[in-house]
Amino acid sequence: MKKIHIIGLGLLGGSFSLALKQAKPDIKFTGFDANPKNLEDAQILGIIDEAKEEPDADTDVIILATPANTLSGLLIKYLDQVGPNTLIIDFGSTKENLCKAVTEHPKRAQYLAGHPIAGTEYSGPKAAKADLLDKKVFIICEMELTDVHLKGMAYDILEALNMKLRFMDAEEHDRHLAFVSHLSHVSSFMLGKTVLDKMEDEKNIFDMAGSGFASTVRLAKSSPAMWAPIMEENKKNMLEALSLYISNLSKFRDKIIAEDFESLASEMQKINKIGDILDLGK
Amino acid sequence: MKKIHIIGLGLLGGSFSLALKQAKPDIKFTGFDANPKNLEDAQILGIIDEAKEEPDADTDVIILATPANTLSGLLIKYLDQVGPNTLIIDFGSTKENLCKAVTEHPKRAQYLAGHPIAGTEYSGPKAAKADLLDKKVFIICEMELTDVHLKGMAYDILEALNMKLRFMDAEEHDRHLAFVSHLSHVSSFMLGKTVLDKMEDEKNIFDMAGSGFASTVRLAKSSPAMWAPIMEENKKNMLEALSLYISNLSKFRDKIIAEDFESLASEMQKINKIGDILDLGK
Image (spheres, rainbow over the protein chains, first blue to last red):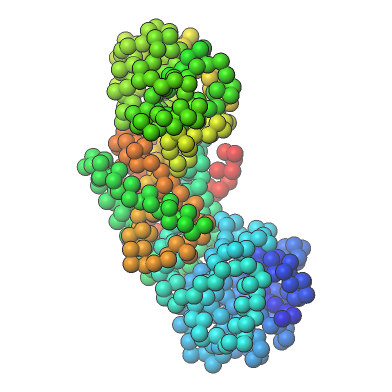
Protein backbone atom coordinates (compact mmCIF):
# COMPACT_ATOMS: atom_id res chain seq x y z
CA MET A 1 0.00 0.00 0.00
CA LYS A 2 1.72 3.14 -1.24
CA LYS A 3 -0.85 5.73 -2.15
CA ILE A 4 -4.17 6.83 -0.67
CA HIS A 5 -6.44 9.51 -2.13
CA ILE A 6 -8.94 11.23 0.16
CA ILE A 7 -11.93 13.14 -1.15
CA GLY A 8 -13.32 15.41 1.54
CA LEU A 9 -10.61 16.76 3.84
CA GLY A 10 -12.74 17.65 6.85
CA LEU A 11 -12.85 16.30 10.39
CA LEU A 12 -13.04 12.62 9.43
CA GLY A 13 -10.94 12.57 6.27
CA GLY A 14 -8.33 14.72 7.98
CA SER A 15 -8.22 12.70 11.20
CA PHE A 16 -7.94 9.49 9.18
CA SER A 17 -4.89 10.79 7.33
CA LEU A 18 -3.17 12.25 10.41
CA ALA A 19 -3.50 8.94 12.27
CA LEU A 20 -2.49 6.71 9.39
CA LYS A 21 0.54 8.86 8.60
CA GLN A 22 1.80 8.18 12.11
CA ALA A 23 1.21 4.44 11.79
CA LYS A 24 2.37 4.04 8.18
CA PRO A 25 4.71 6.92 7.30
CA ASP A 26 5.59 5.51 3.87
CA ILE A 27 2.13 6.01 2.39
CA LYS A 28 1.71 9.03 0.14
CA PHE A 29 -1.56 10.93 0.64
CA THR A 30 -3.19 12.86 -2.17
CA GLY A 31 -6.59 14.44 -1.85
CA PHE A 32 -9.20 16.98 -2.77
CA ASP A 33 -11.83 19.16 -1.16
CA ALA A 34 -14.42 21.15 -3.10
CA ASN A 35 -13.89 23.99 -0.61
CA PRO A 36 -10.63 25.77 -1.63
CA LYS A 37 -9.97 26.95 1.95
CA ASN A 38 -10.24 23.40 3.27
CA LEU A 39 -7.95 22.17 0.51
CA GLU A 40 -5.36 24.79 1.41
CA ASP A 41 -5.65 24.12 5.16
CA ALA A 42 -5.29 20.38 4.58
CA GLN A 43 -1.97 20.95 2.81
CA ILE A 44 -0.71 23.35 5.47
CA LEU A 45 -1.68 20.89 8.23
CA GLY A 46 0.04 18.01 6.45
CA ILE A 47 -3.19 16.07 5.96
CA ILE A 48 -2.28 15.51 2.31
CA ASP A 49 1.08 15.54 0.61
CA GLU A 50 -0.34 16.70 -2.69
CA ALA A 51 -3.61 18.28 -3.73
CA LYS A 52 -5.22 16.88 -6.85
CA GLU A 53 -8.82 16.53 -7.93
CA GLU A 54 -8.45 13.08 -9.48
CA PRO A 55 -6.56 10.16 -7.91
CA ASP A 56 -3.46 8.84 -9.67
CA ALA A 57 -3.96 5.58 -11.53
CA ASP A 58 -1.72 3.73 -9.05
CA THR A 59 -3.76 4.80 -6.01
CA ASP A 60 -4.38 1.82 -3.73
CA VAL A 61 -7.29 3.19 -1.73
CA ILE A 62 -9.71 6.04 -2.39
CA ILE A 63 -11.48 7.38 0.71
CA LEU A 64 -14.80 9.20 0.29
CA ALA A 65 -15.35 11.47 3.28
CA THR A 66 -17.85 13.98 1.92
CA PRO A 67 -21.47 14.72 2.98
CA ALA A 68 -23.84 11.75 2.85
CA ASN A 69 -25.88 12.94 -0.13
CA THR A 70 -22.80 13.31 -2.37
CA LEU A 71 -21.45 9.81 -1.80
CA SER A 72 -23.40 7.74 -4.31
CA GLY A 73 -22.49 10.10 -7.17
CA LEU A 74 -18.81 10.03 -6.24
CA LEU A 75 -18.79 6.29 -5.60
CA ILE A 76 -20.27 5.47 -9.02
CA LYS A 77 -17.94 7.93 -10.75
CA TYR A 78 -14.82 6.43 -9.20
CA LEU A 79 -15.93 2.82 -9.49
CA ASP A 80 -16.44 3.52 -13.21
CA GLN A 81 -12.93 4.84 -13.64
CA VAL A 82 -10.61 2.88 -11.30
CA GLY A 83 -8.38 -0.01 -12.31
CA PRO A 84 -8.79 -3.49 -10.75
CA ASN A 85 -6.35 -2.96 -7.86
CA THR A 86 -7.98 0.06 -6.28
CA LEU A 87 -10.34 -0.16 -3.30
CA ILE A 88 -12.87 2.58 -2.57
CA ILE A 89 -14.03 3.07 1.04
CA ASP A 90 -16.61 5.59 2.17
CA PHE A 91 -17.05 7.03 5.67
CA GLY A 92 -20.71 8.01 5.35
CA SER A 93 -23.14 8.06 8.27
CA THR A 94 -25.85 6.38 6.18
CA LYS A 95 -25.48 3.18 4.22
CA GLU A 96 -28.71 1.80 2.81
CA ASN A 97 -29.21 4.11 -0.22
CA LEU A 98 -25.51 4.10 -0.96
CA CYS A 99 -25.20 0.31 -0.99
CA LYS A 100 -28.35 0.02 -3.11
CA ALA A 101 -26.95 2.51 -5.63
CA VAL A 102 -24.05 0.18 -6.49
CA THR A 103 -25.57 -3.29 -5.99
CA GLU A 104 -25.54 -3.93 -9.71
CA HIS A 105 -22.29 -2.11 -10.45
CA PRO A 106 -19.83 -4.41 -12.27
CA LYS A 107 -17.07 -3.29 -9.90
CA ARG A 108 -19.13 -3.55 -6.68
CA ALA A 109 -16.41 -5.82 -5.23
CA GLN A 110 -14.00 -2.87 -5.25
CA TYR A 111 -16.11 -0.96 -2.73
CA LEU A 112 -16.16 -1.28 1.06
CA ALA A 113 -19.08 0.41 2.86
CA GLY A 114 -17.68 1.82 6.10
CA HIS A 115 -18.72 4.10 8.95
CA PRO A 116 -16.30 5.21 11.64
CA ILE A 117 -18.26 6.00 14.82
CA ALA A 118 -16.27 9.06 15.73
CA GLY A 119 -16.72 12.77 15.51
CA THR A 120 -17.00 16.00 17.41
CA GLU A 121 -19.32 18.95 17.02
CA TYR A 122 -16.60 20.68 15.00
CA SER A 123 -15.81 20.30 11.31
CA GLY A 124 -13.20 21.05 8.69
CA PRO A 125 -9.50 20.11 8.46
CA LYS A 126 -8.54 22.30 11.41
CA ALA A 127 -10.79 20.17 13.65
CA ALA A 128 -8.98 16.97 12.58
CA LYS A 129 -7.09 15.11 15.30
CA ALA A 130 -4.72 12.16 14.98
CA ASP A 131 -6.43 10.36 17.88
CA LEU A 132 -10.05 10.86 16.82
CA LEU A 133 -10.44 7.33 15.43
CA ASP A 134 -8.30 5.54 18.02
CA LYS A 135 -10.15 2.62 19.66
CA LYS A 136 -13.43 3.69 18.04
CA VAL A 137 -15.91 1.37 16.31
CA PHE A 138 -15.77 1.04 12.52
CA ILE A 139 -18.92 -0.47 11.06
CA ILE A 140 -18.65 -2.39 7.80
CA CYS A 141 -21.82 -3.15 5.84
CA GLU A 142 -22.24 -5.89 3.23
CA MET A 143 -18.66 -6.97 3.84
CA GLU A 144 -19.26 -10.19 1.88
CA LEU A 145 -19.67 -8.15 -1.31
CA THR A 146 -16.13 -6.74 -1.20
CA ASP A 147 -13.28 -8.54 -2.93
CA VAL A 148 -11.30 -10.54 -0.38
CA HIS A 149 -7.88 -9.32 -1.54
CA LEU A 150 -8.84 -5.66 -1.67
CA LYS A 151 -10.55 -6.04 1.71
CA GLY A 152 -7.15 -7.04 3.10
CA MET A 153 -5.94 -3.46 2.57
CA ALA A 154 -8.91 -2.12 4.52
CA TYR A 155 -8.19 -4.48 7.42
CA ASP A 156 -4.53 -3.40 7.38
CA ILE A 157 -5.56 0.23 7.64
CA LEU A 158 -8.20 -0.31 10.32
CA GLU A 159 -5.81 -2.38 12.41
CA ALA A 160 -3.12 0.30 12.10
CA LEU A 161 -5.71 2.83 13.27
CA ASN A 162 -6.59 0.66 16.27
CA MET A 163 -10.27 0.55 15.34
CA LYS A 164 -12.84 -2.03 16.50
CA LEU A 165 -14.72 -3.68 13.62
CA ARG A 166 -18.45 -4.39 13.63
CA PHE A 167 -20.42 -5.95 10.79
CA MET A 168 -24.06 -5.48 9.90
CA ASP A 169 -26.34 -5.03 6.94
CA ALA A 170 -26.94 -1.56 5.57
CA GLU A 171 -30.63 -1.38 6.45
CA GLU A 172 -29.93 -2.38 10.07
CA HIS A 173 -27.09 0.17 10.24
CA ASP A 174 -29.29 3.07 9.19
CA ARG A 175 -32.13 2.05 11.50
CA HIS A 176 -29.83 1.82 14.54
CA LEU A 177 -27.89 4.97 13.78
CA ALA A 178 -31.12 6.96 13.47
CA PHE A 179 -31.75 6.16 17.14
CA VAL A 180 -28.29 6.28 18.70
CA SER A 181 -26.81 9.13 16.70
CA HIS A 182 -29.00 11.05 14.28
CA LEU A 183 -31.88 11.58 16.73
CA SER A 184 -29.45 12.98 19.34
CA HIS A 185 -28.41 15.64 16.88
CA VAL A 186 -31.99 16.70 16.13
CA SER A 187 -32.91 16.73 19.83
CA SER A 188 -29.90 18.94 20.50
CA PHE A 189 -30.52 21.30 17.57
CA MET A 190 -34.16 21.76 18.54
CA LEU A 191 -33.23 22.30 22.18
CA GLY A 192 -30.87 25.02 21.03
CA LYS A 193 -33.58 26.54 18.84
CA THR A 194 -36.17 26.48 21.62
CA VAL A 195 -33.85 28.35 23.95
CA LEU A 196 -32.60 30.77 21.30
CA ASP A 197 -36.18 31.64 20.28
CA LYS A 198 -36.97 32.34 23.91
CA MET A 199 -33.83 34.38 24.31
CA GLU A 200 -34.84 37.00 21.78
CA ASP A 201 -36.66 38.88 24.48
CA GLU A 202 -34.90 37.34 27.45
CA LYS A 203 -31.38 38.64 27.92
CA ASN A 204 -28.60 36.83 29.74
CA ILE A 205 -30.47 33.58 29.87
CA PHE A 206 -27.23 31.68 29.25
CA ASP A 207 -25.69 33.04 32.38
CA MET A 208 -27.95 30.62 34.19
CA ALA A 209 -27.17 27.62 32.03
CA GLY A 210 -25.22 24.93 33.83
CA SER A 211 -23.02 22.16 32.54
CA GLY A 212 -26.10 20.01 31.91
CA PHE A 213 -27.41 22.39 29.29
CA ALA A 214 -23.98 22.71 27.66
CA SER A 215 -23.70 18.94 27.39
CA THR A 216 -27.20 18.46 25.99
CA VAL A 217 -26.94 21.26 23.45
CA ARG A 218 -23.34 20.55 22.36
CA LEU A 219 -24.34 18.78 19.16
CA ALA A 220 -26.26 21.88 18.04
CA LYS A 221 -22.87 23.27 17.03
CA SER A 222 -22.57 20.50 14.39
CA SER A 223 -22.17 21.24 10.70
CA PRO A 224 -25.45 21.65 8.76
CA ALA A 225 -23.52 20.72 5.60
CA MET A 226 -23.01 17.29 7.11
CA TRP A 227 -26.28 16.84 8.98
CA ALA A 228 -28.97 18.04 6.55
CA PRO A 229 -27.79 15.38 4.03
CA ILE A 230 -27.94 12.71 6.74
CA MET A 231 -31.59 13.62 7.35
CA GLU A 232 -32.13 13.31 3.60
CA GLU A 233 -30.40 9.95 3.26
CA ASN A 234 -31.93 8.44 6.40
CA LYS A 235 -35.38 9.96 5.94
CA LYS A 236 -37.48 6.86 6.69
CA ASN A 237 -35.71 5.97 9.94
CA MET A 238 -35.43 9.58 11.08
CA LEU A 239 -39.18 10.00 10.74
CA GLU A 240 -39.75 6.91 12.87
CA ALA A 241 -37.23 7.97 15.53
CA LEU A 242 -38.54 11.54 15.63
CA SER A 243 -42.15 10.42 15.87
CA LEU A 244 -41.40 8.13 18.79
CA TYR A 245 -39.39 10.87 20.49
CA ILE A 246 -42.16 13.46 20.03
CA SER A 247 -44.72 10.95 21.29
CA ASN A 248 -42.64 10.26 24.43
CA LEU A 249 -42.26 13.99 25.07
CA SER A 250 -45.99 14.52 24.61
CA LYS A 251 -46.81 11.75 27.07
CA PHE A 252 -44.38 13.25 29.56
CA ARG A 253 -46.10 16.62 29.11
CA ASP A 254 -49.51 14.98 29.61
CA LYS A 255 -48.33 13.53 32.90
CA ILE A 256 -47.24 16.97 34.08
CA ILE A 257 -50.66 18.35 33.08
CA ALA A 258 -52.35 15.50 34.99
CA GLU A 259 -49.96 16.12 37.91
CA ASP A 260 -49.07 12.45 37.88
CA PHE A 261 -45.60 13.01 39.30
CA GLU A 262 -45.37 9.55 40.82
CA SER A 263 -45.64 8.00 37.41
CA LEU A 264 -43.12 10.53 36.05
CA ALA A 265 -40.65 9.54 38.76
CA SER A 266 -41.08 5.83 38.15
CA GLU A 267 -40.60 6.36 34.43
CA MET A 268 -37.40 8.34 35.01
CA GLN A 269 -36.22 5.59 37.35
CA LYS A 270 -36.54 3.04 34.54
CA ILE A 271 -34.66 5.30 32.13
CA ASN A 272 -31.81 5.69 34.65
CA LYS A 273 -30.60 2.23 33.62
CA ILE A 274 -29.23 3.81 30.46
CA GLY A 275 -26.33 4.92 32.64
CA ASP A 276 -25.35 1.30 33.34
CA ILE A 277 -25.73 0.38 29.69
CA LEU A 278 -23.57 3.27 28.51
CA ASP A 279 -20.94 2.56 31.17
CA LEU A 280 -20.84 -1.08 30.02
CA GLY A 281 -19.97 0.14 26.56
CA LYS A 282 -16.82 1.85 27.78
CA MET B 1 -20.31 32.10 62.22
CA LYS B 2 -19.77 28.93 64.20
CA LYS B 3 -22.43 26.40 63.37
CA ILE B 4 -24.23 25.38 60.17
CA HIS B 5 -26.97 22.78 59.95
CA ILE B 6 -27.64 21.09 56.59
CA ILE B 7 -30.87 19.27 55.83
CA GLY B 8 -30.41 17.01 52.81
CA LEU B 9 -26.89 15.59 52.59
CA GLY B 10 -26.81 14.74 48.89
CA LEU B 11 -24.73 16.06 46.02
CA LEU B 12 -25.38 19.75 46.71
CA GLY B 13 -25.60 19.76 50.50
CA GLY B 14 -22.53 17.54 50.67
CA SER B 15 -20.46 19.54 48.18
CA PHE B 16 -21.38 22.76 50.01
CA SER B 17 -20.08 21.40 53.30
CA LEU B 18 -16.89 19.86 51.86
CA ALA B 19 -15.96 23.17 50.20
CA LEU B 20 -16.83 25.40 53.13
CA LYS B 21 -14.93 23.17 55.57
CA GLN B 22 -11.79 23.80 53.53
CA ALA B 23 -12.37 27.55 53.48
CA LYS B 24 -13.62 27.94 57.05
CA PRO B 25 -12.33 25.02 59.13
CA ASP B 26 -13.67 26.41 62.41
CA ILE B 27 -17.32 26.03 61.52
CA LYS B 28 -19.09 23.02 63.04
CA PHE B 29 -21.46 21.22 60.65
CA THR B 30 -24.48 19.34 61.90
CA GLY B 31 -27.05 17.83 59.57
CA PHE B 32 -29.74 15.36 58.72
CA ASP B 33 -30.94 13.24 55.82
CA ALA B 34 -34.21 11.32 55.80
CA ASN B 35 -32.35 8.46 54.10
CA PRO B 36 -30.41 6.59 56.87
CA LYS B 37 -27.76 5.37 54.40
CA ASN B 38 -27.09 8.93 53.20
CA LEU B 39 -26.89 10.12 56.79
CA GLU B 40 -24.34 7.42 57.61
CA ASP B 41 -22.31 8.08 54.45
CA ALA B 42 -22.27 11.82 55.15
CA GLN B 43 -20.72 11.17 58.57
CA ILE B 44 -18.14 8.74 57.17
CA LEU B 45 -17.21 11.19 54.42
CA GLY B 46 -16.84 14.05 56.90
CA ILE B 47 -19.66 16.09 55.36
CA ILE B 48 -21.13 16.64 58.84
CA ASP B 49 -19.47 16.53 62.21
CA GLU B 50 -22.60 15.41 63.99
CA ALA B 51 -25.88 13.92 62.84
CA LYS B 52 -29.02 15.40 64.37
CA GLU B 53 -32.53 15.83 63.08
CA GLU B 54 -33.08 19.28 64.58
CA PRO B 55 -30.57 22.16 64.48
CA ASP B 56 -29.12 23.41 67.78
CA ALA B 57 -30.57 26.70 69.00
CA ASP B 58 -27.24 28.46 68.38
CA THR B 59 -27.07 27.44 64.71
CA ASP B 60 -26.11 30.42 62.53
CA VAL B 61 -27.28 29.10 59.19
CA ILE B 62 -29.67 26.32 58.23
CA ILE B 63 -29.24 25.02 54.68
CA LEU B 64 -32.19 23.29 53.01
CA ALA B 65 -30.90 21.01 50.25
CA THR B 66 -33.76 18.56 49.82
CA PRO B 67 -36.04 17.89 46.78
CA ALA B 68 -37.94 20.94 45.50
CA ASN B 69 -41.39 19.81 46.65
CA THR B 70 -40.28 19.39 50.27
CA LEU B 71 -38.78 22.85 50.66
CA SER B 72 -41.81 24.98 51.51
CA GLY B 73 -42.86 22.62 54.33
CA LEU B 74 -39.35 22.58 55.79
CA LEU B 75 -38.86 26.31 55.33
CA ILE B 76 -42.06 27.20 57.17
CA LYS B 77 -41.31 24.68 59.94
CA TYR B 78 -37.84 26.10 60.59
CA LEU B 79 -38.84 29.76 60.20
CA ASP B 80 -41.49 29.08 62.85
CA GLN B 81 -38.98 27.67 65.29
CA VAL B 82 -35.68 29.55 64.85
CA GLY B 83 -34.43 32.40 67.01
CA PRO B 84 -33.76 35.88 65.58
CA ASN B 85 -30.07 35.28 64.72
CA THR B 86 -30.48 32.28 62.44
CA LEU B 87 -30.58 32.56 58.64
CA ILE B 88 -32.22 29.86 56.50
CA ILE B 89 -30.98 29.39 52.91
CA ASP B 90 -32.44 26.93 50.44
CA PHE B 91 -30.72 25.47 47.37
CA GLY B 92 -33.86 24.57 45.41
CA SER B 93 -34.04 24.59 41.61
CA THR B 94 -37.42 26.36 41.68
CA LYS B 95 -38.21 29.53 43.53
CA GLU B 96 -41.63 31.00 42.70
CA ASN B 97 -43.90 28.73 44.78
CA LEU B 98 -41.40 28.66 47.61
CA CYS B 99 -41.07 32.43 47.86
CA LYS B 100 -44.85 32.82 47.66
CA ALA B 101 -45.29 30.31 50.49
CA VAL B 102 -43.44 32.57 52.94
CA THR B 103 -44.30 36.07 51.66
CA GLU B 104 -46.50 36.73 54.68
CA HIS B 105 -44.38 34.84 57.20
CA PRO B 106 -43.46 37.12 60.14
CA LYS B 107 -39.87 35.88 59.90
CA ARG B 108 -39.56 36.18 56.09
CA ALA B 109 -36.46 38.36 56.58
CA GLN B 110 -34.61 35.36 58.03
CA TYR B 111 -34.83 33.47 54.71
CA LEU B 112 -32.58 33.77 51.65
CA ALA B 113 -33.86 32.15 48.44
CA GLY B 114 -30.84 30.68 46.67
CA HIS B 115 -30.01 28.42 43.77
CA PRO B 116 -26.46 27.24 43.04
CA ILE B 117 -26.15 26.47 39.32
CA ALA B 118 -24.10 23.36 39.76
CA GLY B 119 -24.67 19.65 39.64
CA THR B 120 -23.83 16.44 37.91
CA GLU B 121 -26.00 13.54 36.81
CA TYR B 122 -25.06 11.74 40.03
CA SER B 123 -26.64 12.12 43.46
CA GLY B 124 -26.15 11.32 47.12
CA PRO B 125 -23.31 12.19 49.53
CA LYS B 126 -20.82 9.94 47.72
CA ALA B 127 -21.22 12.12 44.61
CA ALA B 128 -20.35 15.28 46.58
CA LYS B 129 -17.14 17.08 45.57
CA ALA B 130 -15.38 19.99 47.26
CA ASP B 131 -14.95 21.80 43.94
CA LEU B 132 -18.51 21.40 42.61
CA LEU B 133 -19.56 24.94 43.53
CA ASP B 134 -16.26 26.67 42.76
CA LYS B 135 -16.69 29.61 40.36
CA LYS B 136 -20.31 28.65 39.68
CA VAL B 137 -23.27 31.03 39.58
CA PHE B 138 -25.43 31.38 42.71
CA ILE B 139 -28.79 32.98 42.00
CA ILE B 140 -30.49 34.91 44.78
CA CYS B 141 -34.18 35.77 44.47
CA GLU B 142 -36.04 38.52 46.32
CA MET B 143 -32.77 39.55 47.99
CA GLU B 144 -34.35 42.76 49.22
CA LEU B 145 -36.65 40.75 51.50
CA THR B 146 -33.80 39.27 53.53
CA ASP B 147 -32.50 41.00 56.65
CA VAL B 148 -29.35 42.94 55.83
CA HIS B 149 -27.34 41.65 58.80
CA LEU B 150 -28.28 38.01 58.29
CA LYS B 151 -27.60 38.40 54.57
CA GLY B 152 -24.02 39.29 55.51
CA MET B 153 -23.45 35.70 56.62
CA ALA B 154 -24.68 34.43 53.26
CA TYR B 155 -22.30 36.74 51.41
CA ASP B 156 -19.43 35.57 53.62
CA ILE B 157 -20.19 31.96 52.77
CA LEU B 158 -20.67 32.56 49.05
CA GLU B 159 -17.45 34.55 48.83
CA ALA B 160 -15.57 31.81 50.66
CA LEU B 161 -16.98 29.34 48.13
CA ASN B 162 -15.82 31.53 45.26
CA MET B 163 -19.33 31.73 43.77
CA LYS B 164 -20.63 34.37 41.33
CA LEU B 165 -23.81 36.06 42.52
CA ARG B 166 -26.78 36.87 40.28
CA PHE B 167 -30.02 38.50 41.38
CA MET B 168 -33.47 38.14 39.88
CA ASP B 169 -37.08 37.76 40.88
CA ALA B 170 -38.46 34.31 41.58
CA GLU B 171 -40.89 34.21 38.67
CA GLU B 172 -38.14 35.17 36.21
CA HIS B 173 -35.83 32.55 37.74
CA ASP B 174 -38.29 29.72 37.23
CA ARG B 175 -39.14 30.78 33.67
CA HIS B 176 -35.48 30.94 32.64
CA LEU B 177 -34.47 27.76 34.38
CA ALA B 178 -37.28 25.86 32.67
CA PHE B 179 -35.55 26.63 29.37
CA VAL B 180 -31.85 26.41 30.20
CA SER B 181 -31.94 23.55 32.66
CA HIS B 182 -35.19 21.72 33.26
CA LEU B 183 -36.03 21.24 29.57
CA SER B 184 -32.55 19.75 28.94
CA HIS B 185 -33.27 17.08 31.49
CA VAL B 186 -36.60 16.12 29.95
CA SER B 187 -35.13 16.08 26.43
CA SER B 188 -32.37 13.80 27.68
CA PHE B 189 -34.68 11.48 29.64
CA MET B 190 -37.03 11.11 26.66
CA LEU B 191 -34.10 10.51 24.30
CA GLY B 192 -32.98 7.74 26.63
CA LYS B 193 -36.50 6.31 26.74
CA THR B 194 -36.90 6.40 22.96
CA VAL B 195 -33.68 4.45 22.47
CA LEU B 196 -34.35 2.03 25.33
CA ASP B 197 -37.84 1.26 23.99
CA LYS B 198 -36.30 0.55 20.60
CA MET B 199 -33.61 -1.56 22.17
CA GLU B 200 -36.00 -4.14 23.58
CA ASP B 201 -35.87 -6.00 20.31
CA GLU B 202 -32.64 -4.52 18.99
CA LYS B 203 -29.59 -5.91 20.73
CA ASN B 204 -26.23 -4.21 20.93
CA ILE B 205 -27.56 -0.90 19.73
CA PHE B 206 -25.29 0.91 22.18
CA ASP B 207 -22.22 -0.50 20.60
CA MET B 208 -22.88 1.97 17.81
CA ALA B 209 -23.48 4.95 20.03
CA GLY B 210 -20.77 7.58 19.78
CA SER B 211 -19.72 10.30 22.15
CA GLY B 212 -22.50 12.55 20.82
CA PHE B 213 -25.19 10.22 22.11
CA ALA B 214 -23.42 9.82 25.47
CA SER B 215 -23.27 13.59 25.90
CA THR B 216 -26.90 14.17 24.91
CA VAL B 217 -28.29 11.37 27.07
CA ARG B 218 -26.03 12.01 30.11
CA LEU B 219 -28.73 13.84 32.09
CA ALA B 220 -31.00 10.78 31.80
CA LYS B 221 -28.93 9.33 34.64
CA SER B 222 -30.20 12.09 36.94
CA SER B 223 -32.12 11.37 40.12
CA PRO B 224 -35.92 11.06 39.71
CA ALA B 225 -36.27 11.96 43.41
CA MET B 226 -34.85 15.36 42.54
CA TRP B 227 -36.35 15.88 39.08
CA ALA B 228 -39.98 14.76 39.40
CA PRO B 229 -40.48 17.41 42.15
CA ILE B 230 -38.91 20.07 39.92
CA MET B 231 -41.49 19.26 37.23
CA GLU B 232 -44.16 19.59 39.91
CA GLU B 233 -42.90 22.92 41.25
CA ASN B 234 -42.21 24.43 37.84
CA LYS B 235 -45.27 23.01 36.11
CA LYS B 236 -46.42 26.15 34.29
CA ASN B 237 -43.04 26.99 32.76
CA MET B 238 -42.22 23.37 31.97
CA LEU B 239 -45.44 23.04 30.00
CA GLU B 240 -44.53 26.12 27.98
CA ALA B 241 -40.96 24.98 27.34
CA LEU B 242 -42.01 21.44 26.45
CA SER B 243 -44.74 22.65 24.10
CA LEU B 244 -42.32 24.91 22.23
CA TYR B 245 -39.77 22.10 22.06
CA ILE B 246 -42.32 19.59 20.74
CA SER B 247 -43.53 22.15 18.24
CA ASN B 248 -39.98 22.75 16.97
CA LEU B 249 -39.37 19.02 16.66
CA SER B 250 -42.65 18.58 14.77
CA LYS B 251 -41.76 21.35 12.34
CA PHE B 252 -38.36 19.76 11.79
CA ARG B 253 -40.09 16.44 11.08
CA ASP B 254 -42.48 18.16 8.66
CA LYS B 255 -39.51 19.55 6.74
CA ILE B 256 -38.03 16.08 6.43
CA ILE B 257 -41.40 14.80 5.16
CA ALA B 258 -41.52 17.67 2.65
CA GLU B 259 -37.86 16.95 1.74
CA ASP B 260 -37.08 20.61 2.32
CA PHE B 261 -33.48 19.94 3.26
CA GLU B 262 -32.27 23.37 2.21
CA SER B 263 -34.52 24.97 4.79
CA LEU B 264 -33.39 22.39 7.37
CA ALA B 265 -29.76 23.29 6.70
CA SER B 266 -30.38 27.03 6.94
CA GLU B 267 -32.24 26.50 10.21
CA MET B 268 -29.39 24.44 11.64
CA GLN B 269 -26.97 27.14 10.52
CA LYS B 270 -28.86 29.73 12.58
CA ILE B 271 -28.85 27.44 15.62
CA ASN B 272 -25.07 26.98 15.32
CA LYS B 273 -24.63 30.40 16.89
CA ILE B 274 -25.48 28.83 20.23
CA GLY B 275 -21.87 27.64 20.20
CA ASP B 276 -20.57 31.21 20.27
CA ILE B 277 -23.04 32.18 22.96
CA LEU B 278 -22.08 29.25 25.19
CA ASP B 279 -18.38 29.86 24.64
CA LEU B 280 -18.89 33.52 25.63
CA GLY B 281 -20.28 32.32 28.94
CA LYS B 282 -17.03 30.55 29.80
